[in-house]
Length: 133
Image (cartoon, rainbow, N blue to C red; front, side):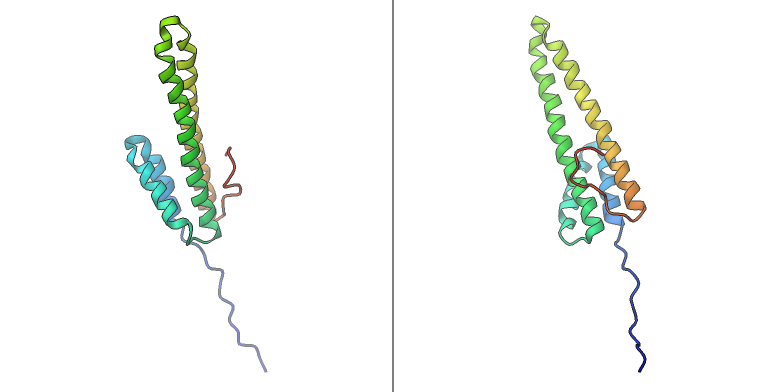
């Protein structure tokens, strides 16, 4: 008796929606609104996604929230530094806040680029819960 079992080829996950999330994030630097749309798409699709896409959605969601937290810290330093300019203590606070906000923007773009890199290769993001790239 011969075995006629057919083994299906490995099912590939669709890369389009994670790519859309990364694209919306990068487009958000021009209008701001697409950051939120990208976050909503990532949250809406994470639970039903396969392991590869789930890692990208988790990575994108964490990228958004970590960048918001650090951006708020930088903004708070600037806001508290402005009234302190009267006594010249505020200038270092304003500079630090601006540097934090600029670094967070670069970090955000770098994470999106790395996410796209792994997505194009068809790989799960290796450390989706990591703070760094």
